[in-house]
Amino acid sequence: MPIIDVRPYRDALPNGDVHLKFHSFSLRERPHRANGTFANDVFLVGPVALAGQAPASPSIDQYAMEKMDEWLTNLTTGVSADPMMKKIVRAKPSDLVDSCYTASGERIVEHLTHRRQVQ
Image (cartoon, rainbow, N blue to C red; front, side, top):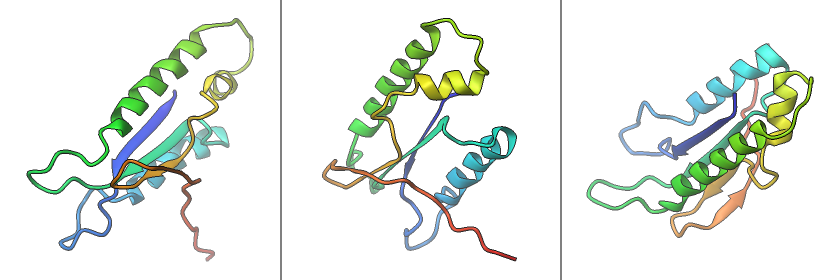
């Protein structure tokens, strides 16, 4: 299934937080193990809105909704006997890629990865 993981960057909050970006990487690992790829998963990470403030970049949510609609619409067009994962990857909008957003709403395209430790 197509996945767009929208997450505020909460890793650096002074008192910590249970909504760390680590969980996005954990989620991404599941399709990778099952399908050999995580090309059906996109991270969109933005700034944290402080208590009592409006979100710094509400456009992230709007962008994610529009892109998911486009992705699912693309997925329903065309007929192919290809495996579902191949269809999903082919249907993904070309401009939907891992990105971070600044507090001013600037989008920074960045492939988000984690480092695996070698044991």
